[in-house]
Length: 319
Image (cartoon, rainbow, N blue to C red; front, side, top):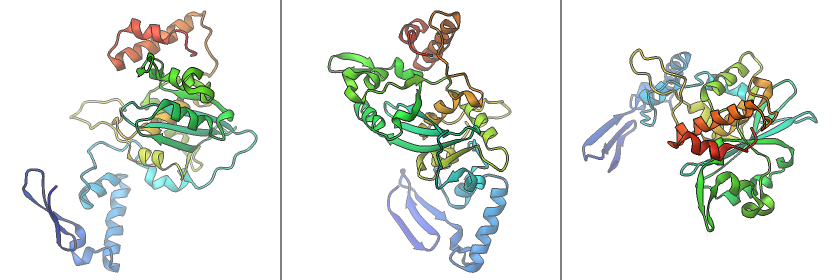
């Protein structure tokens, strides 16, 4: 946008990228709808309540607040804002029975995210920590994770299996992200020995798991309010836009979802909520061969590589 002027309250004049003048008229330009007045505040509350009754906060932002960042996809968790007070909590009380799990979503061009989820014996889960890095350096990430006070208590750090095959350039040639994070040659005393491929990467499965955990008054998946990234991501997660009568999978828009992915890897790898067991498969069994073939097939489809190439990279990892 070019020059921006505001001749009066609620009225904004701009120039778009083509040089054309654009007039933006906000509801606050009407004295009877000015939220700074009692009458206006009552009008805003009524209008917002009607829209929130349809569980569509994006409509308010797009149509009333002139927010051009709002897209047309349906929210994945439309009741999140309504139930936020029961989901986002100020504190977490650990007990001797609390177990801790890590999740890592590695980004090459995008952000890298690490989260910690605490699990209680009643099969309730709380995201208690998050950290993100922009254009992350593996040795820095490994050091910060290893130095976290809960590192030794982590049962595992579930990751996208792609880090086992994605090659990066080093001074001595090429290696994988997993090797840079877990090898003492690269990470020294901060080498992460708790990395494991997640038992699943499906957004649909994780969405359904969380919806089930949010059924009833007591929410069995909560988030500490200090974890602002994942709170914002979950609130804004959207499905791909529907076109016509075509039935789409519960696919989400692949943007601003790094912390979401990190905690997804944890929840899909936890045995108490219906995911695969954490027991490692015997490498001498047909089950292990089938599991490696499935992981390699997924990686080949995602990376545009051959099944044989991904199979060779994946064979030998703990599944």
